[in-house]
Length: 240
Ligand code: URA
Image (cartoon, rainbow, N blue to C red):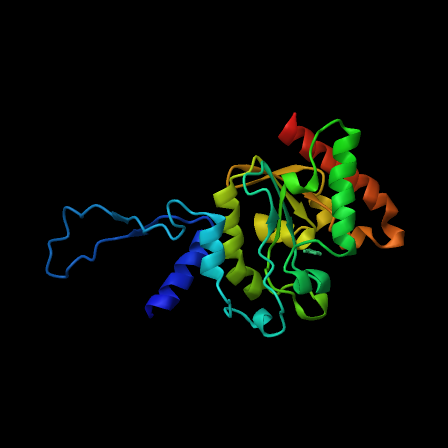
């Protein structure tokens, strides 16, 4: 395994939350079997730099070509908003408008997300605007035809989402839709089972709600009400 492959493998472990690997010392055949040498803990150099920052992460992403999504992208969509926010929204991946502007949730679904955040906050007497929260996606490049990102794409890009969330360390995360929920929680259940309840991502409270593009479809109006309820819970938890 060369250094790059090793780094990728370690980053994958880190995405899974594994920070320490254990290796038994090699016992030479000639050594007497007793007493057994103690297991040696190999503490890996942490792959997220000690003082990680969004700027560092952006620099590490660079002109990323780590997966096939780079082939058709126009702009990498890293994330936007308040970098010290107590609340981070995580979507699935950029669409056409986001790909053109390099910003997350700027198309129709983005307008709905803005309304959801600002409308709910205003109704609940919580003085925040969209610019007070941080918004990003699981994958940073637009999947062709807005298809769902594939597992390997999410795995590769997931290291950067992991670092973004660790660098911001919000009080809560709101996963927008099943793909973000599955990527963050590592579960297979769909959004209808996961939404409206608190989960945990590395000791940070995580709420799942619907994906805004899903809420734009006229036959999903009931889901819209549920999404508003989910958001109310999140905003009160974070800002009360
Ligand atoms: N726009 C985004 O940035 N992400 C989504 O998941 C959907 C639309």
